[in-house]
Image (cartoon, rainbow over all chains, first blue to last red; front, side, top):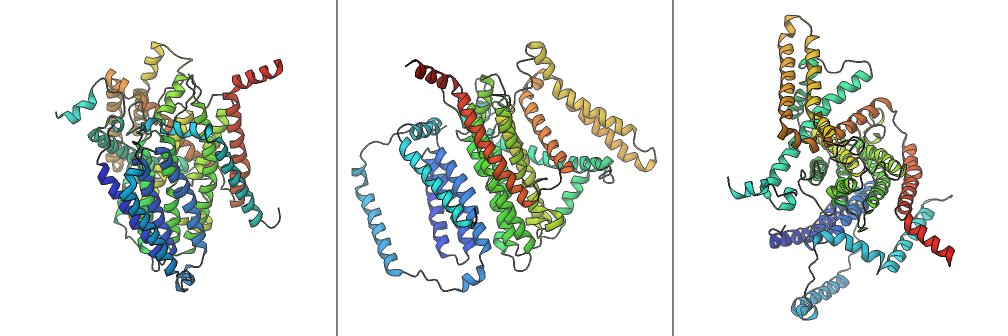
Length: 169
Length: 430
């Protein structure tokens, strides 16, 4: 079926992502920050859906929202929040922050002005029904080697975590 | 009638309302599914109390209505009228949000559950992935509820729950992947994640995936069946709400309507994970024995099952009506029970009309399979003692996870056995 109210959903989802992203860094309570981050991730998953990438959206929800953020909350709940709220923030690095923001803003403006010339190729529209199959085919044919390297890296990380967490193995 | 109502009713339309792009019919389906699930939760509530009571040689609810049939309504009224308490020191925003998240996560997954080839709200390309992802959002609600209550028992319950759900999701995912692998065993060699596509793959291969590559399909189904009980925090894996240790676990501090939202979400999740198991391994909406007992006579015999079920329920009701005490005090209850039986007979007669009979086939078999799973849930609760937490973790990580990986690899090898055989053959002949 044809997509409905694309512009509305684009602005709605991106607005939600930006708003909750700002909330993540302004909330004092880390649990509230984590919840705002979940909202950001969900709205980004919605944007993936709009780009006809349902597989990426599904994986985003399963891995980030259902897995990683739950572990985040798990850790935050074990930390003494009242003490950390009273502590002075030690990451007040205004100068590098402003410089980085200015650089990023300049990049955005440049892309807005020159973007059409840089990406002159027409956008390939892929039917939604084949997206997942295409991702699988690509991962296991053209990008087999990087894929395996990434999985090896994850395996090393798992073993490292176990070694660090357990004194006696 | 306006076009947006009639165009979906066309005989040539063989897709779900979501795929067809009919918002009106999608809304009708959503309301039907939501109402049906809520009704099922109410029935399940009564059945659970009655069945558990009979397993423990008690009577269970008997006072409100005949055989306690009106007990769920009385309970719901009580919960709605109770005061909605937010404990002092609780984080009120998160505290009030948590039950809503559990409810939304529990009900959103019904978007893709296929009650029949066209009886789903929509069919997504990533159906099973969507179901696993959205149902895993429920754990967030539990963690938020436990933390925001600002109390010890809920916090411990939430910690246990998140650890348990994250651990069992891994084994569950591996079992699901082995079933998805089986859908790719067609000449084209492409599998599918769509819920309707998975059932159609079972139809095309003339077998339910539980019997495929016996016993591999069965082991995968077994892993899923264990993991799904742990995922829904039900006995024997109900550590997050273990009464004897944590009073009520993560929802200790909740009262009234918000507590009932937790219960609604939990039962909705039980129904939805059961329907994942049915879709992946038990042939979804297909009737039993499609190969062994085929032909028009058997088709007709199986199509009479919905009516027979309701006749059976009516017979049970009438039998109970006859056994009601004859004292005048029970007269209204006896009449009510008889009328209940009369409604069952009426439904059974409607189900005998050929058009209705053929139309409800798919939905009937799907719902019947769900009912078996829900009975199993009650049965587990009545018979199994609760696991200790270290035992729970050992089962999840040291038994189910390796078993799942083994089944996945074995399924892959079985799927490619002709290719592997050819390869070995060529190696030998070089």
